[in-house]
Amino acid sequence: MIKGLAITPPIIGRISIGKLVNKNDKWLPEKDDSFTLTTQIQNRSGWMLHPLHQRYSEGAANGKIRSIPVKVLFNDSDLNLRAEYSAFDRSTGRPICVGNGEVAKRVGEGGIEEVPCPSPERCRFAYEQGCKLYGRLNVQVDGQNDELGSFIFRTTGYNSVRTLAARLRYFEAITGGNTRHLLLQLKLRAKSTTQSYRTPVFYVDLTLRDEDTLAEAVSTAQQEAEHYRQSGVDIASLENTAKQLLHNGQFEDGEEENSLLLDEFYPEQNSQPETTQDAKPTNLVKATRLTNKLGTAE
Image (cartoon, rainbow, N blue to C red; front, side, top):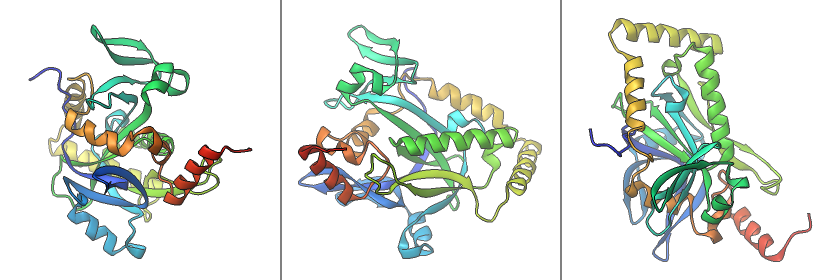
């Protein structure tokens, strides 16, 4: 196997709570209050919608998808959701520092070195380079026809990352390590904070299906796990292989993905209010920019 290349779970589509719009020949992030399922193909109008998007939007109120039935790929929470602090070189699109809050891999003159990672709030390098929390969640959407493929949800929102991380850990614990057999749903939620000027911000949660109780869902998951074992499907071996493949490279995303990530999640400084939190209404972003320019008397 070629070394230095992280092999990630196969991706067949994307899930987002926003989109990129082309303004003056430049792609800019625009947040939304519903899910969008897309392919991995982008044209002049933006990302092309996945056929499953139409399927779920047709049954949704006002055509807005607020929940998506899903399952996760793995039992191991750290494989389903990978979250880290990341800073990128805007001129090349390559990561220059990636850390976990304790230790970071940073690109220096002599190559990649390990340095302390105190988190972006307490790191001058992070402040100068625009380092952010960056999470990736892989899920399988009901209706897809690839049992080892997945849709990826990427986010730089603290609310989404913290909520998803907590849910996955809880599910792993209560199922005895059988999370991948739970019937789940991605659900869009809203909350107001001081930083959002009391206007709702949207974030992503992972819950049981509405019709299921906890006891029923766990019982069904354990039965499904036993069925897989009797069928000879070796999930433990799958997870060990996935870990080895992810650790085969220094950084997870490739150059092609990174250039798009910079536009969507790490825009220029004057666009940061739209992406430092989970999804916000556009009028709030404009108000925030105006407030930042005029000053505030909180």
